[in-house]
Image (cartoon, rainbow, N blue to C red; front, side, top):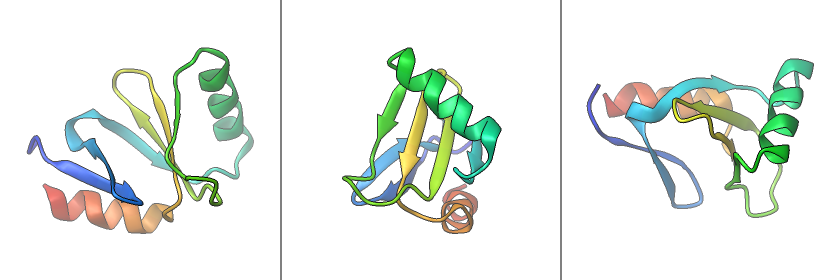
Length: 81
């Protein structure tokens, strides 16, 4: 990997090395994952009150909520490598 940063929206960045998965937030398994992360204090909400449009799962077990659509994040991730 490139050791770069991924802009996940609203001037927030995460390391591209940490990204395991980019997912839409509307499926039941992802909703359950977000709920479990919140219960275990492993949820990072970067939406600033906006609608969550993507969920990012990291190697370290954190779940990050982003206001950007999943295809947008995927494109940014691909371009950051």
